[in-house]
Length: 232
Image 1 (cartoon, rainbow, N blue to C red):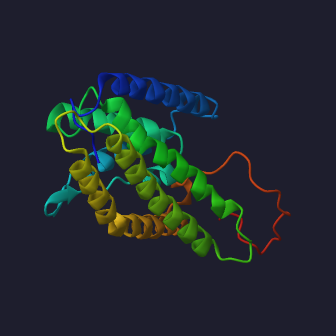
Image 2 (tube, rainbow, N blue to C red):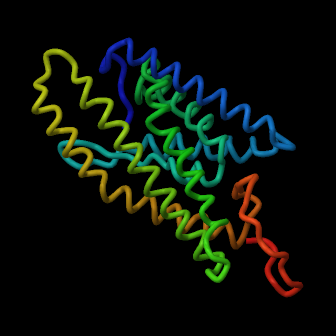
C-alpha cells in the first residue's frame, strides 16, 4: 500500500508533502506539551523498526501482493508519536528497499499515518465504555476497532488517491477494476489487524499498562473505593 515514484502527478506529491508536513507539525506540538516529551522515544524507536519490518513483508496473493500496515496498533501504543514513527519508517523503506518512493513520501505518510491517528482516537473509547465492562474487554474492543479501522481507512485513502489519478496511457476501466479487486483482497487483513491489535493491547494492559497511551481528558468518574482496581 505504498505509492511508487512517478505514479501520481507531481502536483499531488507536493500537496502530499504539504499535508504531511502540517500533520507532523501538529503532532510535534502535541508531543511538546507533554510533561516529558522524550520519555516515549525508546518505545517509538522500537515500534518504528517493527513497522519497517512488518510492512516490508509482502504476502503473495496472485496477481498481487499484500502487506500489513499496523496503523491502528501504532496509534494505540504511540499516540501522536505514531505519525512520526511511520514517516521515518517509510523514508527508510523508500531509501533502502525501494518500497514506495521519496517523491511520494508525503502521500504514503498520509495513507498510513493519518489512520494511525484515527486509531489512537478510537482506542480512547476504552475510557468511555461502561465501568461495568471488564478492563480486558474494554481494551480488547477498542483495540480491535483501532486496528481494523486503521487498516480499512488506509485502504480507502490509497484506493481513492489512485482511482482518480490513473496515469496517462493506462486503461482507466481496467486499472479501476484492479484497484477494486485490491480493496476487496485487503478485507481479511482488516480483520487480522483488528484481532492482532486487540490481543496485543490486552496483553500489555495486563503486563505493561504503562506502555499504552491515554487521553489528557477522560470522562469524569467517581473516586474508586479502596478495593477497586486503580489502573485500567
